[in-house]
Image (cartoon, rainbow, N blue to C red; front, side):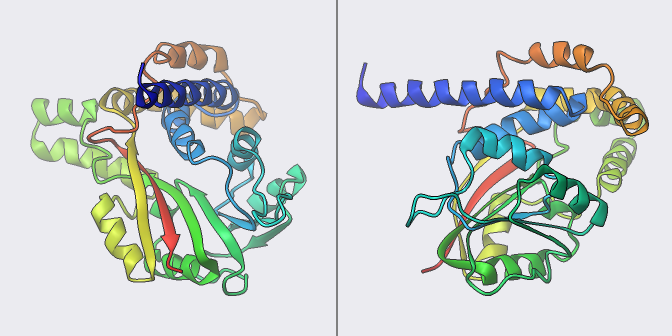
Length: 289
């Protein structure tokens, strides 16, 4: 076996372990479709390893994702000292900030928008976000602020649905076959409104947006295969029911049923890093030195 083949086997083994870890953690707390999306996405982000700090978690929510993610990769560290670094979080909803504060994960939390981040210029080495930027109307203002607070050479690791998000939706195809092309598109429009998707962009579109603010797209990869996109869409009714009941009773119902469904995808859930297309993107960006 060549060195390249050994490295490939080692990488695939690590990715599969990441997938198994995130599948186990997420399936206990997230609805079915949420897990189908999050597991390969989190694994693709985790492949970049431990991030340098200080770090800003942009759109931190209640801190659930960050707590699980950094439990896997390790808390951000200061590369100069090797010690744990400051971890900041920002979210526009105060109730989410209050929940995040109870986790004891963050050094400091801010309730505010990504267009006016209350941190000094060049104050963080990393910015991290997970399926956040597509929900922000002021995309340009957000990128400008990320560029401002990043130190020269700092990185921004983020994920967002791609321009191919709905390409392989089965319900869309069924509606177009049974009724008209417009019927399927109305279904997609409903999904995008429900999930507040303002931006569904290609890597090239993100590259152009980022470059305007001195940020360079270093690498990107697709996640959410054709099969996973179809499973995500099929699982929406169950996921909606899980979401409603979890909000009402404080615990995720039918988790064993959804976990069984997720494990049916276990053999294929470790998505390759060279997908030709996918419904989601994980992108690594660097600020010019």
